Every structure is written in structure tokens, then in C-alpha cells.
Amino acid sequence: MEKEQTKWWQKAVIYQIYPRSFYDSNADGIGDLQGIIRKLPYLQELGIDAIWLSPVFRSPQDDNGYDISDYQDIDPIFGNLADMDELIAEGKKRGIRIVMDLVLNHSSDEHPWFLEAKKSRENPYHDFYVWRDGVEGEYPNDLKSAFCGPAWEWVPECGQYYLHQFSVKQPDLNWENPKLRQAVYDMINWWIDRGVGGFRLDVIDLIGKDTDNCVMAEGPMLHPFIREMSSHTFQRADLVTVGEAWSATPERAFLYSNPDGSELSMVFQFEHMVLDQQPGKEKWDLAPFPFLKFKKVFTKWQQALYQKGWNSLFLDNHDLPRAVSHFGNDEKYRVESAKMLATMIHGMQGTPYIYQGEELGMTNVRFDIEEYRDIELLNMYKERMEKGYEEQEIMRSIYAKGRDNARTPMQWDESANAGFTEGTPWIRCNPNYTLINAQEALVNQDSIFHYYQKLIALRKQEAVLIDGWYEPLMEEDENIFAYTRTNELEKLLVYCNFGDTPQTRTLPEEWNGGEVLISNYPDSKPDGSLRPYEAMMVKIKRG
Image 1: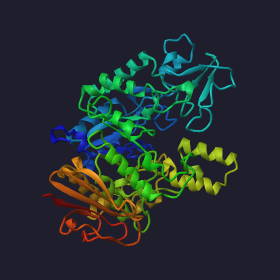
Image 2 (image 1 turned 180 degrees about the vertical axis):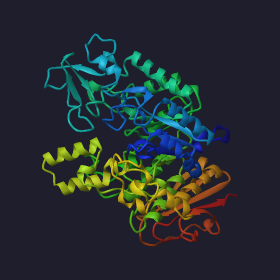
Image 3 (image 1 turned 120 degrees about the horizontal axis):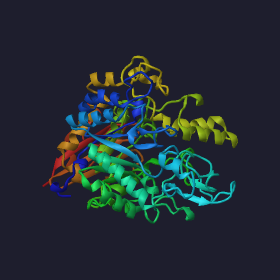
Image 4 (image 1 turned 180 degrees about the horizontal axis):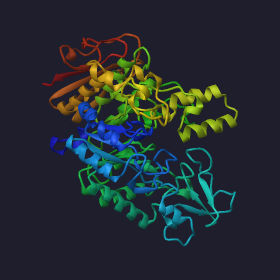
């Protein structure tokens, strides 16, 4: 990749905010846009380049905002359009762009389009959604909702079923309808004109579905639809666009992230995130973590997309467990393992994403079932209890994979409710906030926060992190994750111990005397020895 071709988002680090859990400015227990504005100095100090904002559009909040009832308004729980404009403007002053989270596979059943669509088959908006004829009680096919139960809902007024791949209150949009597509493009351009820096596209791999053949992801019209959308919208401005694509393979990612800009900047793929679930089963069906497969997945994606596409780099988000609890040791070695994981992911080629609280080493929670709020989690609990699963087994799955692990309030300080709100938080705080919080992290120069700060700065300083070829080392090693990045001038070694026992290996002589750019122990040396969860980046000159 020639330097003159480098896009701003290829050197950027993006920070994801889950607004309802970030910071509450008005004491109603729910985070809001003014709360984010107040915390912009914190994010500026961290050094990030953009904020990916989980949905703040008007919504009944059946699925925490991923059920949008008005794409061109802000939900009152978060503020209003004036607050959104202020956030965009204040972010710009600090060099921080705002990336909106668009849900284009489905809307809320309270969206005006759907309220019209279900009135009759002749309504102009009826074909904005996916309908099939049928008889009440006899579903058009066997499609299941991701949130449990059938994916079809009967509407007596029309004598038809509508498709909902998620909640019954999230009817699927019909991308086969050009009028629907144009309405979507008009909405996207409206946001571009307001100054947003890009879009994250929720479950975008589902919009090209072939419903009658039960092909939901990567349907035949997916990429034609994305290319048309991009040409009508994204290509008008210097934006970052990232699609959520659980079904993506490297070959498909070539299309999504083609350097010609015809589709998107990159996709979120999740192959590395589903390795510890039983094959062919749900995410709740846990399996041992296969470390060697984990390494091989990263190698596959790093090498396959080199100079052909672009990777997104992440270990957690609003739908996933906390990274340090999932892949590290969130007790004795919480700080060391959080820094190690950050070193491992930030050394790769792609755009790193930090999920709120990741830079503090926030951890998973263990609540009683009554304290959880996530619709997916609660539906699963009910369904599995009815099927006779042991409650202890169900709760073990929730502790490991529940989405509310990531949605507890951001831990700002040790005051009541972690400094998140002066009211009653919409979901309980993690009780460990008195020990793990931003106030402590900012003061402690050896904190996880300051380590992330250094990693972000390195991405802007070291060209090899942007354009270097990835080569795995010690691929069959059960304890160490090691790889190199190499360009014409430099070579970088990323060397990480993924366990709580010391490890010693023989490194090639070329690393003797290399410059340690960053490490999570104060006296790390590239001599092949690693302490528990030790990690380092080492640089040498070539030639």
C-alpha cells in the first residue's frame, strides 16, 4: 500500500460508545448525548480519532435502539437533533469524527413506514417490508428469529405474515423495492450533510436475503445493493464505513472492503469471536477456548486481506463479553492481560476499535436473572428453562456470553453508581467500580488507560503498523501469540504470553538489541522470556 493511498481511517483508532451506558447528564439513569459531549476531553486525552455511536435514533427501545422508528430524529432519552449537531461540532474541534450506527435490515414496527404498510396490501408502503401469503398458524417456512421463536408474524388486516429476523417488533425491510432503497439513500445523505464522519451498518450482510429459499446472509443481491448504496451516498464524502457481517469470509471481505471504494471501508467479521462455542450450536453452548485456532484465524484474515482489503480489529463490543474476561485473566492478572490483549490486537494491520471501558479493563458481571435487561438473554433464559435445562448451566452461559456484560455503566469514579448517574441507573453497575474506574486510571501512569494511549500514538508514528506484511511465528505454540510486521524499512515483532505461567522461547538473533516500543512490564527485553501475560512490541531496522 503506497503511503499516498493511505486513508485517514487506516491510521485511526475508533472508540465505540454505547450511549445509554456511557454518561448520564440529566440524572434519569440513562446515558445521553450531552453526557458524551462532557466526556469528549477524556476521549481526546486517550487519543482516539472517531466515535462509533451505537444507535441514538428515535426508537421504542425494544432492542436498545436497534429498532428505529425515525431515522432522522434523536430519541428523547438521548437528547435531540441540536444535541447531535453539537456533538458533531464539538468532536470536530477535537479531531474526533462521529460515526453513526445505521440499522438497514429492519426498522421498528412503530416506524411510520410499517404503520402504513400493515394497513393493507394496496398501501404504497406495504412493499417496504417482506410479506408472504399464508394462513394464520401456518408459517410460510421454517425460518427462526435470532431472538427465539418463528421469524414470521401474522397481520390479519393484510392476511399475510411479515418477516422479522430479530424481535417481532423489528420487521425486515424489503431491499428488492427500489423506492425503499431510495428512501434509505435520501436519509443517509441527510446525515452526511449534517457532518457525520461515517457509518457502522448493523447486520448489513442480511439485506440481500432470498427469503423463500431461507438464504438470509450473503444473499445473491447483497453486493449489488451495497454498491448501489455506496455510489449514491458514501462516495460523496471522505467517510469511514464498516459493515457488521457475521457471515463474512476473507473472499467476501475482498468485495466489502475493495480498495476501489465501491462498497465499504471494512467489515466486522466474527470468526475469532465464536471459536469457544460448540460447532453448529448457539453462542450459549460453550466450548473450551481453542488458542491455536484463534491464532490461525487472525493469520488467515491478516494475510488474505493484505493489499486487497482492510481489517477491523476488535475483541469486544456492545454484543460481546468483556475482552479481559473472555480472553484474559480478569482477576489476578487483569491489568497485565488487558494490556497484553491490547498489544496483540493493535499490532495488526487494520483499524482498531476500542469498546467503552476496554481501556480501563472493565470486566464481565454476575447478576441475578432479575437484574439483566437484554431481550436476547431473557428470551433464551425463558426458553431453556421451559425445555428443562439446569438453571446453573443457563446462568454459566449468561455469565460468559450475555450482552449485558458489555452494557453495564461506564465506570468513571468510585462515587455512587460509578459516577455514571445521579439517578438510578437503567442497569446495575458492576460492583467492582470502586477499584476499576477512569478517575483512578487517569492518575495512575501505569494504568491500562495510559497503555492504550501509547498504543494509539504508536499507530500514528510507526508506518510498519499500517503497511507491514504479517507473518506468524510459533504457530503451534500453546502459550505464545507472536508475529512480525515487515515493510521495506522496518520490522516489528509482537510477542505475547497468553497465560499465567512464565514462558521462555528462543527468538531469532535479529531481535537482540531491538528497540522495545511498548511493553506491559517495565523492564521487558526481547530475550525470549515472558512473564505471566507479558507482551511487547520490538522494532528493528532492515538492511
